Length: 232
Image (tube, rainbow, N blue to C red; front, side):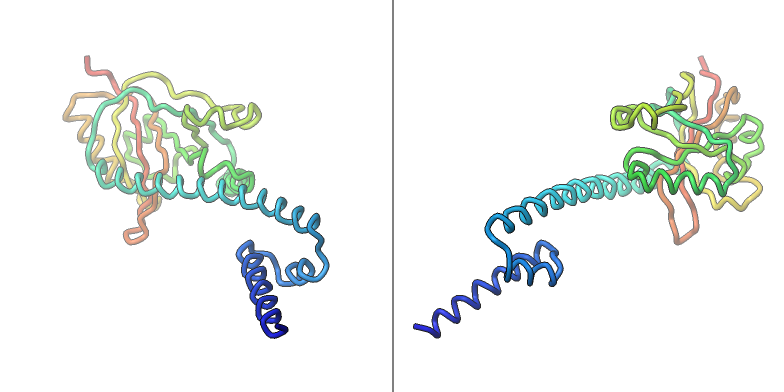
């Protein structure tokens, strides 16, 4: 009967509207589809949105990996702040910048726009041996970018230009926090006391790689590698 046809037609129309809204199509486009689109038009729209969804799924997977990695960094900071060990060179390459801080922010913004910074590149700092011995805070360091060896295939030759491996040597590893405002960093002072107790001399630079920020106490946490004598 006519009433049943009317109910069925409205039910199908509502199902279609909900389907298209789930695809995040704008109302105007939904109206156009439901009033003008042929099967061929509809197929084209669906294929176009499938490609968009595939891209979004990829973005969400990358975001999920980044969230997981950041949670791991939090656990790493909890485990290694104030603890020390001697290890070989870190497994990443560095590219150092000569720019002023304002230029560095502009460069970081450029990398972020290119969608490669947060899941492939990391913010790194380099200190001279003299700066380390003075336990200087982190605002004196030279800034740059670091990339893990396993991420090298993800970057183009142009993006990799200027990235050099860290020198093979013996390094003291720990995690430190900084507010960038103190003349001396208390965490570094503790690391220096540990080196003195181990009778190890600093023979090269210190590398620092940003991990995560703790907003309660205002600390940015870095893992650091200080080049030292091997102790053999």
